[in-house]
Length: 167
Image: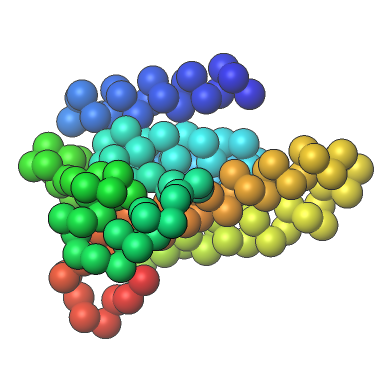
């Protein structure tokens, strides 16, 4: 699993540094792996979103940071709960969004990928009954964290675009 994490970090850095990388192929790969119930490959999407946009799901936050979440964007950035998006990260966010929308289907990959992550999270508890409980709970936690991070990314990427789309 360590090699996959390292490969995912490398993929995230390469996609951030080289704008001509095929993000759609990477997103399609993750979607195909989720369809085949391969949860571990979700780390690729997680690192891609983290490295390119800075959107991350913070698991352990203090009471002060929770109060800062109630404030505006400036207060959230100062509380280190949310990363401030600079122009480079906004461009990367738009690249990922465009690659998710460039699929041949009407919806693209953005919403189907969100649904696949949620389905995988729910099915993990029932399909991995032969594995130790600690392993299953760790996979469910990682899947849940990836779902929240991806939902945060979609909220940021589609903020102010279409009033009919809400996350």
